Image (cartoon, rainbow, N blue to C red; front, side, top):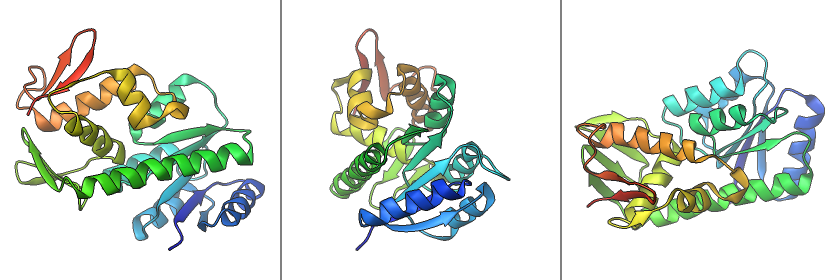
Length: 230
């Protein structure tokens, strides 16, 4: 079955170029020219990957990503941006994006990033099937359905949060460094900062811990990284 990619890009030439090149690689492509239409298509259909421009009419890519994650959509997202400032990259990753590509970029780079994100996404999905449902502190996670609950109430988790907690689970009772998380969860190309990792840990602690300021499940090992106690 062909993997489905949604391209949300307002520049016509860029949009058509992305469609042509990705279809040549064997993907099924759906397109949207503004943020509002893009968000509606994200909510109405299932995709394997979303390529999302940041500067869009009607609704920015940041807002589209934020609303999609808030609605529980865990589909991997790659941001397209003409901006190179670190703050934009950090913000995008913290909102729940999986990678970003700075314009201008080559077709070869684009295809490599797309395949890398899909590979990581497929790996997490395959691995999660063998885990099933786990309970860590207050958080119950069903990796088969990509669902999470806190004290019997459904809670929203981004695709990246599922990846981070799964990685910690697979290395439970071991010290995992920030470098390991950056390398194995985000990948070399994404180049997030250690602050991004720390923020994701904070978000998970808020769901898991009775008192996030005095964690019992995800411990900080000063100078080394984090340890999931189970």
